[in-house]
Amino acid sequence: MKWFFFFFLILFAIVGNIALLDKISLIRILGVGVFNLFVISLFGLWWQSYFRQKEIRAKEPFATMILLVAGLSLVLIGIQQTIANSCEVLISHSRPHGLNNVIVEAIESMGYCRELGLVLIILGLYCSARSIKMFTFKTK
Image 1 (tube, rainbow, N blue to C red):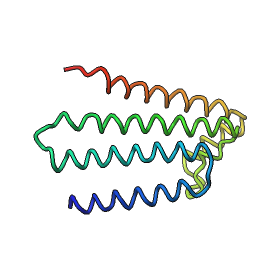
Image 2: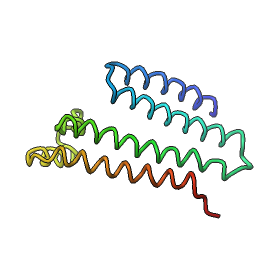
Image 3: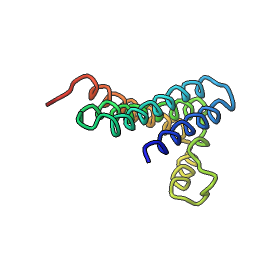
Image 4: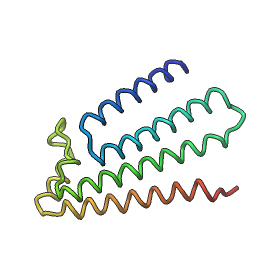
């Protein structure tokens, strides 16, 4: 099972990079960097789970890196939404009547898409700052 996950992770990385580099823009290039950081953290968790079972605390940096990736992703989505002043980034076309779409369309109808983008940036910076603090200030 461990090698299946390893090959799936490689396939996920290749397909994700191809999908993100479909159109070239600065946000997409930064997104590729964040995506690759996510893949590296998944690979690190995989490696620590199967080959370093005695060092339990060694998994913490990779789990913290996933929180960092989540924060950076929110920042990138918020920047893209703030610059475009459109809520199109958050609308899911596969589920047009989902709760997410209803909330985002209500915010868009009030004209607060830029403010929602700023909220996403602040939330992403908070998550990123917490993860960086977890990297640097370990408590016993």
